[in-house]
Image (tube, rainbow, N blue to C red; front, side, top):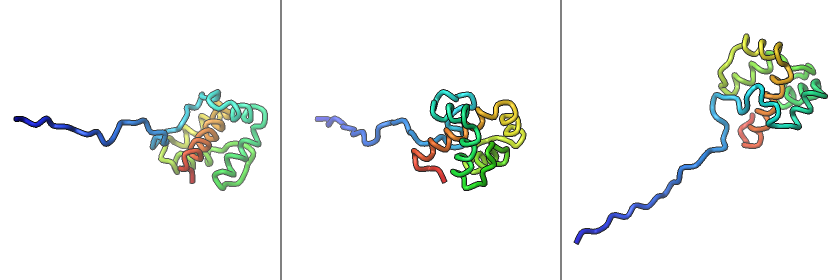
Length: 114
C-alpha cells in the first residue's frame, strides 16, 4: 500500500511594507499621496524645509538644499546625482521637498529612519 505524501506549507508569500532598498518611497510628483505634507509645502515652505533639516539633524536653512537631498539619498542608497538633485530643486522645489518629507515620514513609520 502506497502512502500519500503530505506537504505542509510553513511560509506564505506576503507583501512587505518595508521600504524598497535604493528607491524613493514616493515619486517626485506624488504630492497628493500625503495631503498634509503637500499643504505644508505649498503654504509654509520654509517650515517644511526646517522640519526636514531637523529630522536629519542638519542646520535649517528654511529652504531645501542640494546638500540635504544628496545626503539623504546617499544615506539610504537611493540612486541619484548632485546634478539630478540640483535640477529637481530648481525645476520644482516644492515637489522635491515634499518627496523628501514623505520619505522621512514613511521610514519613521516603519522604524527604519536614522
